[in-house]
Amino acid sequence: MATSEDAAKAVDVTAQVAQLKGGTDAQANALSELAAGGPKSASAVKDIIPLLKSDDTVIRRLAAYALCQIGPAAKAAVPDLKALMQDPDTSTATTAINALNAIDPSAAEGIQVLNVTQ
Image (tube, rainbow, N blue to C red; front, side):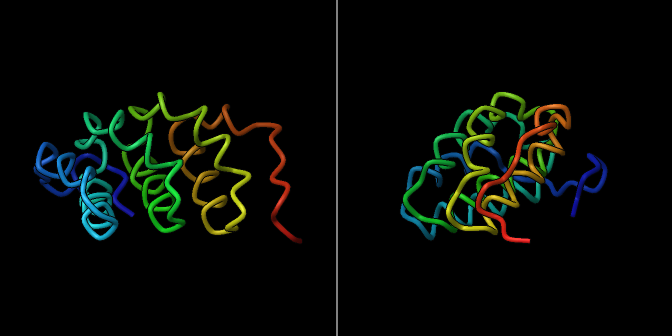
């Protein structure tokens, strides 16, 4: 996982944001590219947040992952990520938790995930 700005890939954020308005494949590719950009993709946060509510499980998970890779600059996504922690897909819920921990660790404190079996 690229977590340092130095390790972040050079990404054309504007072009990837435009792809977020496309079909599922375009969205998935754009989210992967934005995740690879790490903190340099911070300007896309407001465009990624609505995808956390996508009907497509993969898109929800990739959106959370992209926000995780962007890190603290994605703080605006915290309320939606908290809601995503209850996603019926365990992998998506886990990705939301990881994103919260990367963005603002205090945001995940005391929250129980109801759909994860032990």
